[in-house]
Image (cartoon, rainbow, N blue to C red):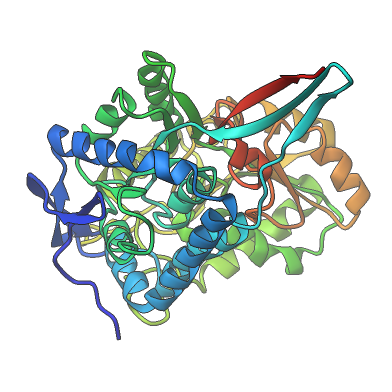
Length: 473
């Protein structure tokens, strides 16, 4: 069994680099530090950017087919090291071993499938006087900033298309979950040319250093809308290109013709998978009044069967909140709901014990203007909301600054599709949720983001259009 327990180093120019200092990494199930991660200094970030810039000219002219093969080869490296990577990921992130395996192999899948994409060349003029075509060229050095909820797959949402397009990358994982990404950087040394993929880790200042760094040409960021605004403001100073995948407050609309027994479990996991720490998790559930009571009862009954605990323990289905700031935010939303007198039909009482554990909590029909409805909780707390008619449900679902995803649940697919077409979100699911594909565009409307990830749209985010004209005759 491969283990990755110690000796965590950054990857700069294909070499192992220790941090100028270090910081502790905690297991969120115990609140105990179990490793030290390197803390990148400004000078070391300069070195990483310089390595990426030095590697860029040769990588940019590497034949596209060769870049495809190298990006696809990352999948095999991740799969070969799955055992050690997923166990390490569970320790630092808190998710179960099964979900950690899904995170790692999701990154592998993304590399494999993204590598099948082709950059188009468009003939814009072909006349006796002139020939013109538009192609897509790499931008330069990409700063990729990945979050803590899915550290691996969300990193490769960025790394795979950036490399494929001919850019070089400086990748920064969250300081809450740096270790698995550091090990991936280590095992990819020698797989990719030196300097093509650099991995740096550090505290809260490293992200701002990257977004303002003059040697970085594009920032791709996944995280909260609040932080996304700061990223965009910082990048504006040098007109960096940006892709922002930000927060969501996804609504599910459940119509009265569903089979309650069939959908209850699916709706539960739509809201509570990964302990609710998914940007496209169902955060608000609008249920028609005719089935509100039976669906409420079915959700509560199923929730009582779900085991919460250390993700490394057999049988655990939901782990802890990943970090203390997010844990305290979820507790604050629970406290607000209690202070306002909202009815918790399940949960709401947090034990005073080690670990950032929050019980599955369901709130019965709180007001539409309440914080638990209007804010993104990013934890295992779900407001169930009753509606009488579909126009009301659509209006309430759309009354949000967010527009990442939404789902519609109905036995009538045509009706569900019509409702879905009216929802102001980047992705709409019918009778499922959270399905993403490397071959489908994914991005947010409104304040849920800027740009796309996945598919040709996502690949083109890492290019500049270049048109060439040739005069004939």
